Length: 412
Image 1: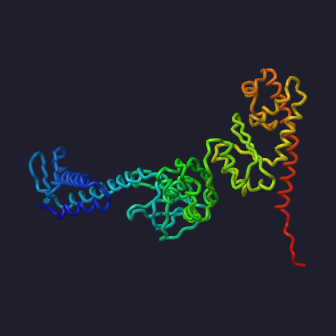
Image 2: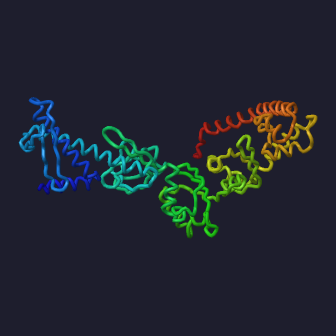
Image 3: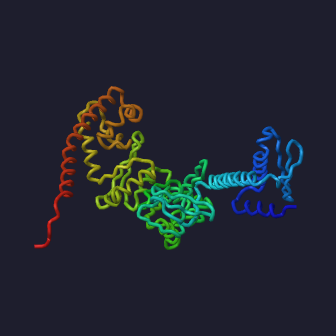
């Protein structure tokens, strides 16, 4: 009985998370390779078999059905067996790591930063596996140091001939989803559903939530008592702002919610163009647009609508321009402009872009009249574009001049 062999196999299986049977098979293959190395010069075609008893560890070897003593093969075959065994154990370990983590893609793991490699972080997870957090997947503005514990999303698992590469991420939107599942029990249990999420990592995230239980307030549950739950997530993200809004099947309501904290007075949807025109008070304009356009950009991604924000004055100007441009067209009744606005078309640019088909199908114009209206709108749009071009160029010139203007010295 060879209990020493059994103990070694059990230790390797436990430490490297390898199936015990695979190790025994590797040992048998290694012994066969050693025997072939020993007998290869004299009998290349020899049939060599090695069997290890899984319970006792006893090893039996046969060459052409005649039992041989595996211990008498010599030093060089033993070295061959050792090399084969090392290679096979490493291959089994790679396969074990791949099988484990490929099933865990999309999960959050915790690990220890062990070193930097050219901007990428190498993170030790579960004490035996290294993973990589590339620079592109690190949150902008955050820095990490060696020995720091860090939480990341398993983004991808790739297998190569020499290693398994586990790619981590802290910028992927699903990282936010998993953090909410960890911090908000109602999300993990499925009572609250994250319907949509838009993120600019390190800066701001918008998330739309819906509760399946009328007794549970989706937004309140995600925020927590005095903001305790959302604070834990914000701290994990290094201060990234998170806006939690209510999901609504109505696109009008959803867009208005997505632009919060700005308050909207009117939302016009144009399904043909996939665009929404949102009217906000003058004092809410900068809030609706956000810093560097971030608020409206994230709202557009969250709702899947192209959002154009106007003040009441700008909205009225566009409608007036549309009305005055079409007022002289014979055959159009007084309600035509109202019907266009109901379709979400509030400018000649929108009208020129949608083409004649919606006017025929939705409003009921004759094809000839629809084509006439579109041609006129295209002319008006070209004229409006040419008139606005110098203004835009002048604004850019002024902005560039301000940037290049030398700073005046305040000292006398």
